[in-house]
Amino acid sequence: MTVITFAGPSGKRQEFVTEETTTAMTVARLNGVSGIEAECGGSLSCATCHVYVAESDVHKLPPASEDELEMLELVAAERRPTSRLCCQIVLGDNVDSLVLELPETQF
Amino acid sequence: MPGDRIGGAPDSVVILGAGHAGSQLAVALRDKGFTGGITLVNGEAEAPYQRPPLSKAYMANGQGDALWFLKPESYVAKDIRLVAGPAISVDRADRSVTLADGTSVGYGHLVFATGTRNRPLPGPWADRGVRTLKTLRDATALRAMLDQTRSLAIIGGGFIGLELAAYANRRGIDVDIVERGPRLMARAVSEPISEHFLAQHRAAGIRVHLDTGVASLDRVGRLTRLTLDGDSHVEADLVIAAIGVTAETSLAQAAGLAVEDGILVDEQLRTEDPAISAIGDCARFPSAHADAPLRLESVQNANDHARLVAGRLTGTPATYDALPWFWSDQGADKLQIAGLPGAADRRVRRGTAESGRFTVFSFRDGRLFAAESVNMPADHMVARRLIASGGIVDADALATPENALKTFLQHRQDA
Image (cartoon, rainbow over all chains, first blue to last red; front, side, top):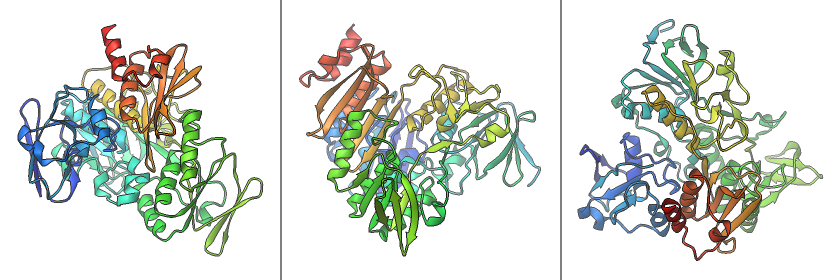
């Protein structure tokens, strides 16, 4: 089980609880979280599901793959050390809670 | 109830079709602050879902719920009225749509997002067990059949056929692909990319028959026997035809709208009726990226069309000029296409086919207009920006791997 929170740039927070293994992108999409476009549906082709992982949660996630790092080079908003594409963030028993901040834009 | 009329306020939007274009439009309208009624006419029994994974990830994992655009309760939360439909007629004078159950839904603005339908199978193919893929239901049935399949023949060497072929091959199924044209994915990619994927699929053990039509098709016991041009034969447990689609325009045509394999729209995606727009795979629109009006079958096109119309309906009209892009996952290879790779007067390559990671850049009149990347996602992203900003970049410099691609963007910005 994972408690996942999406924090919008304006401060709006949306919290969801997932029981199954899924990706943070899928949770955002199914719940209609504004600010995650996820145009390619999670195939690492578009870089429109960019998020900033909360500093305190970075250690909970395995590092990004080479391909994800390449795509992160070209996200529309500022790239930070905590930047990830949330289609690559797998939620499962290994992650109890996660706070993801949304960037200003995905385009 | 039959005859009941719902909605109809001037600010209500009715969307016909709940694929990428229709679903994205409903969500984008709410994101942009639209407070009027939104009716999304699905046309299928399942909650609206993404189609691209049906020939890719869904074949492998079978997770139908993961394909949903929104959870069913999210439609309620966003005040999007999802109706199963389908729509059976449009009355433009009355500004209303009649659904299959006889209900009438009034609209202030109507949007066709009806997508495509599979090209009909020739003659007796369907009766002889040839399968097609369009819906989640089709995909679920195919998955179950593939469990029992040792040999598969795929008619059509486009994206869908090749994605299915690569998946089946990885599962150990013996695969033949029969393609009538001289190369794979001819409509969508350049020759070097066709050649690369031909080599990849053949190296994986798939038999690819190019320049080959199916002369006849017969059941022989539990097998299907395909007689190919030149009188060779292929026998398979299962035959899938992936021979393309045509725009689903029957309702629009019946409503008197102009149709030419696609509902004709202007640069703002409006039909000739100011109360009606058309978006996504079903729309034929003028484009700065092509000489003649385009109809594209892609997620990008559906999403960008949807956002443009959502903007117009909420007070920020714009001209559509988004750069087309596409992707396809085939076996271990990720193909990403930026722009429309048509006739080029020069093509240069970064990386090598041997390394399995390369990009083909296409130039016309000295400008970069398309880039096709194999396992080079960063190249794809840079190329999209370069092309969208006019494609002014030096071909020789681009072909030099020592020049980091990102620097081309910086040069452009500095210029």
